[in-house]
Length: 195
Image (cartoon, rainbow, N blue to C red; front, top):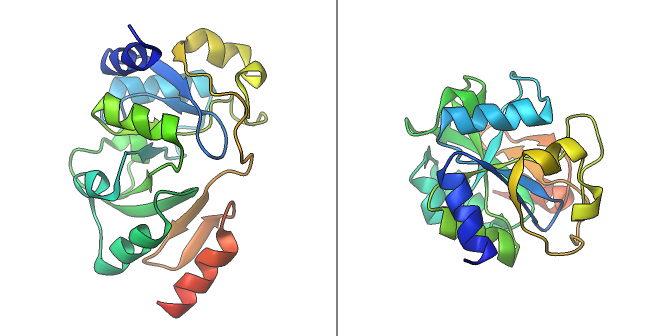
């Protein structure tokens, strides 16, 4: 059985998987399974009031789980796949646990072959959050993973060092707000001014 098969099975079983993205290593679980999402919060020691985004293999697959406006769709068409997280209104399939009860959810389509393959194989949106204990450095290679994360993960997909190191930029197109400046923040600002 390939690592991808094992990773997809682990996600289906409600377990955690560490995977590379174009920015830092991420921690994947089934984003639509409240118990799996709860495990992500637990392992990271993350504040439950801080929402977690989800990753999918394409914009059309994202639209099955969010209600995006025409402008949000244009933005996604321009910047995804890429190191960008777009906040959109969630559909009923997205659990409160993921969004901390908010009506918007972060959508990510990673620009990384391994991450996209995992998204496709998982067959469900996966959590898109850095694979580290909250407050500690993000990991750019598996050797940098916190012991707590390594122990909790059923599978670690090792793809060497990631290119980025900067986390994704988080943007709410509807309110033209950049919640977290990361990769491509300047280009995003220009787009928001012009569209």
